[in-house]
Image (cartoon, rainbow, N blue to C red; front, top):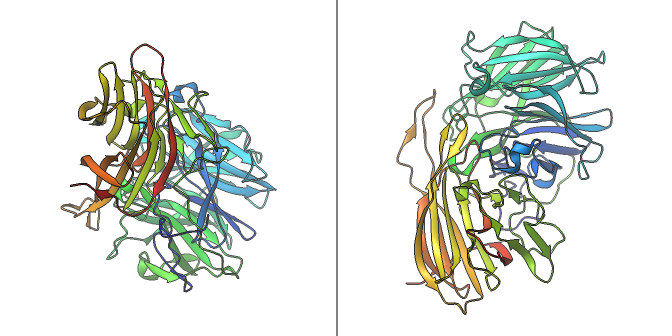
Length: 535
């Protein structure tokens, strides 16, 4: 969509851009170019649909165009499995097909293909079944042979910091042998090296990979004349005196004019892992970034044309045949969760609650934060709620908070629901705290909910890596209104990222107890100026 002031846009309109190019949690981005088009994919974990596919013409202006999978493979993802599911993918174009490799750390390595990235993707196939293999990237050599470079998750397999290479069939359906380890970061001062991406240039095989940790690490480039190694390496991109901590996993792409660019993410805590674009050149067959550090403002890539400013959409009037692409469910969706039409907009049905915590309800309808600060307002019709129904807005992360209307036999109340997740061997546990805010008249047919995110002063630095940086903080404010004009604050809390993902805001509707459930109708989910609070 064309950008307006409700959305983040890095394009300065004068031939330059300012990082990040996406202030949205597109973790572990990988990018490929096909002609004059660029396609990006990112991690999606347990949220569905999964594997977001973004498109750009100039590497600065991006638009979300599709998802490669409708559901996360496996019946276990009918319920949220926070931090599990689809990890760091890689996208390549080979012999007329767009091919994505994606890992599931508890299940294996999967491959999904299409000839049309805007259209339907094929069902994923499992290339490798087993635990602990992550961050796969395919590579086809000039002789027709195909390979996959990957890494390992210590939480699943017991070790990390090692890169592995194996030969695969060119159609990506089978592995040929077990392969071998080609780089040990434990012995090369590159602890937590992961996320490898393989390329070839001037007879050298190159692997771009981050090391040192997500928030405090750096970028490594390795090269060898033999695909099996040994590989020499250099640290090529570090935070240094910039505000871009841990320049992490990403992708090398070229423009038709021959320029070289590197997209990577930066972890900014609650807002997630946002995407930056860095220029580089080559010297003595090594990539060279100016002063070995990220740039903040730069001349846009030379792609031969000037394209309009674009952005990833966030708000929705729910008048299309389907939900906007910005929306994802907390787990694999099921029939009966919602309907959408031009007359009634979005109808959310009160699904029977089975989870102990609202954070583990599958039918949370969520989207990523898309700005450093923003205000979202939802208009919700509540006239068809039944006793036991609860519906409202939520900000989801390890620390979560919701504001909703709760219909009981004793009347209708506005309630706040909040808590914080704890993890034991990748399993999330949380206990909700529920408190009444105010009563709601039985004659009330609609309510307005506001969710506001504001930056807070940093009070602490991260000093774990070679470069210190202030830890960002955000406050989430939840409020309500009867008329959509004057809002009353219900409560606020400090945001925290989810399990490997940024915080998300969205909608919920569920049913507790026995009896007939009802539904709510959401007219819109809008973004704009700060709300006006009543005294």
